[in-house]
Image (tube, rainbow, N blue to C red):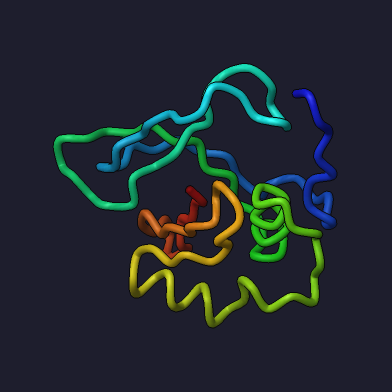
Length: 125
């Protein structure tokens, strides 16, 4: 990593870490980033295609922790009072599969790829 990230304000470790496979295409863009340095950035196509298989690692974190990471990945100041991604946005992404939130960042599209034990599985792309 070339640039340190503060992570979530709540430093509680994930309650669970698991792996899964989803019918979405993973692709890479760019040649380097300010944060990670050399190498492309990974993106997930939010459209489901049964011929595509992407293996993903899930971290069971709180909605507030997800929001903090979403802010950082899109160059925004981590601010727990911002309504950018709250419970109503969570309900919207669950019913629409994908919603664009942060237009200025690379990872401003939040995608719900499914549920595990009735908990939504979210990613940003």
